[in-house]
Length: 312
Image 1 (tube, rainbow, N blue to C red):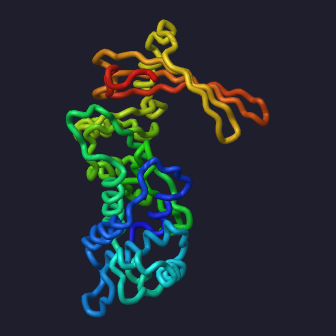
Image 2: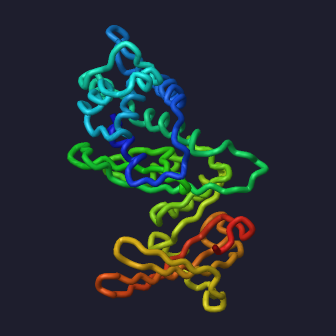
Image 3: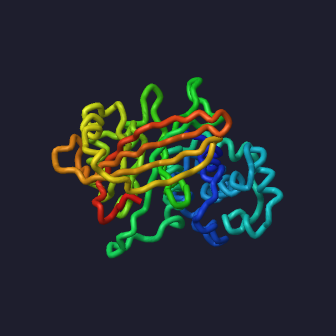
C-alpha cells in the first residue's frame, strides 16, 4: 500500500479552519458508493462487508479522532446506528483485524484519487465557463508522521484548495527521487480550467508551466536559484522605476512580517514559457522576542494578465 489511510485522512482535518461546507449526512452514502468502486483486493469468498462501507467507516472514525485500527473498531461499535446505516453497515460492525487486512492490501493511489474527487465535489462549484472567478490550488509536499517505507517516512505531494485548505489530490513521491516527477501525475486528474496553480521554487520548471497551461489553467511560481538565468533577468528589471503597488502585514510564528509588492508586465523573451507578469516582493521580518530584523527579496512570475490579477 502506498500510504496509510489514517495518515491520508488526518491531513484533511488537522489544523484546518475550513471555509468549505460540512458534509450533510446523506453525503456519507455517496462517499461509501464512491469508495466501493475501488478495486477490491479481497478474495470473493468470505467477504462479509462491502468495501465502500468499511473505507467510509475508517474515514469518519479518523475525522472523529481515531488514530489506530482498534480505535476505529471501537468507534464503529459505539457510534450512532443511523450513521452506520448511512454508510451501509446495518447488521454488525467489523473488528480491527478485518480493517487491517483490507487496508494493508489496498491501492493507496486509487484511494487518494477517490477521496480527493469526493472532497473536490463538495468543496468547489461546477466550472462555469462564463464565470471568470479564479480558484487557487497550492501544490506542496510533506512527510507523513508515523509512516515508514524502508526506514524512511513516506513523502506525499498534495494539491490543496486555497480557500478551504482541502486536499483534493495527492501522490506518493518515489523513494530516492524528489517531488518534480510527481507534479504532472498529481494534476492530471484535476480540471484546471479557472484554476491558478501555486508552488514553491522547486516546481518552477518550464515543463510544469507548459503542463498547467496545456490543461487550461494558470500558474504563479516563485523564482530562486534553481532558475539562475531567469532570476538574473528578473533582478535586472527596472524595479526602482516602478512605484509600490501593494503592502500587507501579518503576524505568526513569533514574528511580524511586512510585504511590499511591485508588479510589471513582461515582453516576450523572458526565459519562462507563458509568463505575462513578474513580481518583486520585499519581506521584512521582525522577531518579536529578539527584535532581530531580516529583509529578503523574492521574485515570481505568473501567466495571469493584469486584468485577471492586479497587484493586490
